[in-house]
Amino acid sequence: MNAASPSSALPTVIVLASGRGERFRAAGGTGHKLQAPLVGATVLEHTLAAVRASGLPWHLEDVGHPGMGDSIAAAVRATPQAHGWLILPADLPLVQPATLQAVAHALQGAVQAAQPSYRGSRGHPVGFAAPCGPRLAALSGNQGAAPVLRALREAGQVAELELDDVGIVTDIDTPEELGRAEALLRERLSRG
Image (tube, rainbow, N blue to C red; front, side, top):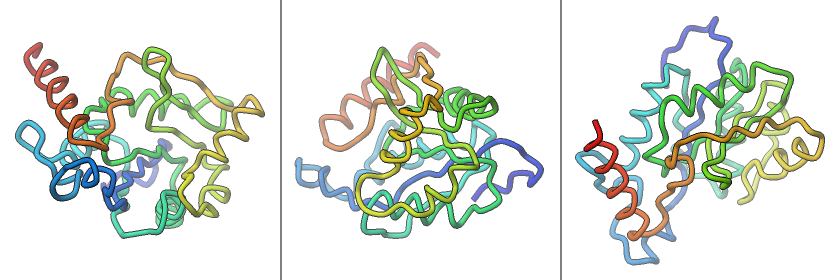
């Protein structure tokens, strides 16, 4: 966990790395998708590098849990002093530090949640303000925070952020998606 200043009023990034990666192996991948090599590092190392570069406090949730909801709940309970949370699946290695900052800063307003989109497709991280803590800490099962986000959206409490970051929708569930991510990352690196 990042040793961020306790006086920081910015939310904590929760990096969800508890999944078993079964879809990746079922699609022909070898090993765990988070440990798959991707341009000189693993998928997880790329994700964590972006989180560190954002300057936000963060927590890696990598203990096995039955479902995504259970992982989110455990991470929220492990960070009770957080000023909100950004829920980031660990299989998003191309997410940009500026995106994490943008979602974090969107929570500084009157909204209770913030979700980025890329060319009309919603992605991650999804940000939740501190008052959402009890609902997030009570999650279980495979739906993750979708029920909480849906209720907040219906109440008009979600900031929708259209960002120019393909990384928010580039998750790794199959070897083909890993290949696509590698091509996008090499293109990004070639532009400097």
